[in-house]
Image (cartoon, rainbow, N blue to C red; front, side):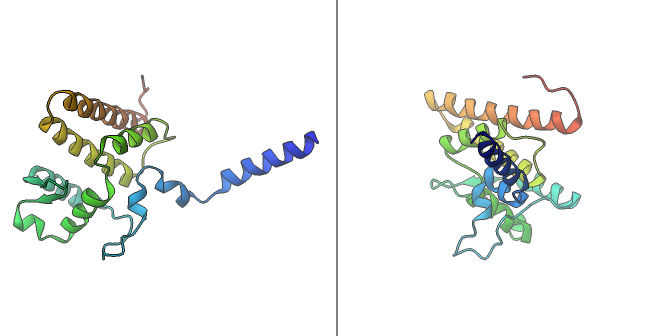
Amino acid sequence: MCWKTLLLLLLCYDAQATVSHRWSRAVLFPAAHRPKRSSSVPANPVLQTSLEEVELLYEFLLAKLEISPDLKISIKDEELASLRKASDFHTVCNEVIPKSIPDIRRLSASLSSHPGILKKEDFERTALTLAYTAYRTALAQGHQKDIWAQALLSLFQALRHDLMRSSGARVSP
């Protein structure tokens, strides 16, 4: 009986180790891999594929962003908003990144137990979530401000931890 259990555990371990990497991608941002029926945007949009796109993302963030009461993010600058990458930015900000405290806490917990360094798209989505959380922290008052500030701190620590790991520096808690 003992060898059968050992064989089963070995088989389960082997099956877990050989699971396709694409199945583990959806852990941090599951909405990125679920296409919306009403959307023409492809699943898993990525904003940064070149240095020019990194600079464009920076411009989007420096431009005046507007967050509506229903938490939809839009770019106020009409010229920037008309760019093709702006629709991907809109999709990532409105359909992919978490916007509620429980979802942001869930992301922070997933990030703290994430092995290795983040993929480029997960890093950019976490950074956008951090920016959104900073905005919400600035608008909040009283006890809500403390809750948003704690979420902001958790995301910052997760990104810092990832940057330290990717640079090869020793990571301290």
